[in-house]
Structure formats: structure tokens, C-alpha cells
Length: 226
Image (cartoon, rainbow, N blue to C red; front, top):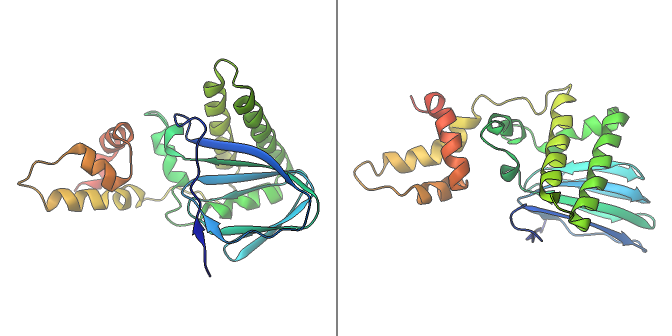
């Protein structure tokens, strides 16, 4: 299976988000691809077969599907199609008070696509998430004053809806998440105990921003270092 790494370009780099609406007027199949961002797809009109690794979702008007970071996916258009694509990085939408909840979306055990059962079994949640996606598109398109705040709140609302309606606990907190994420950092530091270590270099190894790494480490150093 050949797949390409899609590079997602943000219109506003400070938001780390891309959202757009598009349509197709003919049968079309896309190739397997992946990207580091989470993706949600909302079907406004038409039908679409959406493949996430070995699973297939038969989508129609009003349906929503979520794809985790770096998960392989592709799709096949069945009819005239109108849909909205939302892609975003998780990290920028968490601050020092909400960082602990990021682990629920870490995908250390289950890919985020496992949470699609929520949309299939809970029509009310599916509609709420769809409404959030449409509002996100409107805010990002209009760019009225404070739209960045509105976008951030809507992203958090989607994550909250997933978290609170995950009856199967596929987003369950992983006890080993902190240790697993910081292990490369701890190994790096241990191998350079007598050298001067630059925090910026450690952030690169952890794949975190400076701000996020400092907050994350302070909250978890008692649990991951022993």
C-alpha cells in the first residue's frame, strides 16, 4: 500500500487549523494518505465511502467522521458531494488548566477513529458536532473580531462532546502516557548528564512547543521520574 504524507497549510499559523468546504460533481476515489493533524469530515450533501485503515464508513448527509493523527485514510465519492473538512493540531487548544485531558486523545492504545461509534450511536452528539463544524467554517470565513476565541471554544466543545459521550471508554486515560511521551527526553538527559542541555533541543525531541513542554513537565515530573 502506497500512501503520501499530506502537508496541511494553515491560513492562520497561530490557530494551527485548516477548515474548508468543497464539492465533487463526479465519481472520484482518493489515494491513501495521512497527516499529523486530527481530521473531522462533515457531509453536507451526498454520499461518501470513507476508509480509515481497515474500516469503512458509509456516510451520507449529516454524518460526521473523525480520523486520528497520522492515520491512513482515503475516500470514494458515490454521488454529487458537498462536505466540510476540518484539520487541526491538538496541542494549541490546551492550556495549563486543560493539559491533563490531552492524554485522552493521545492514541497510545486506540486510534482516534475508534471514537466514531459515538456518532453512529448518538444522533444528538453527531448533530452537535456537525453544528460546531459549520460554525467553525463560518467563523474562519468571516473573521469577525474575536473569531480566534470562537474557533478555540468550538474545537474544545467538540473534544468535550467526544470525551463525555465515550461510553465504551476508547478514549480512556492511559496510565503510561506521560512516561511514554517523556521517555525519549529522559533518555536524552541521562546520556548527557555532564553536558549543558538546551531546553529548545529537548522540546524538539518531545515534539512539543517550549510553552507546552514546561507546563507538561511541571505537572508530570513526580509521576514520570522515579
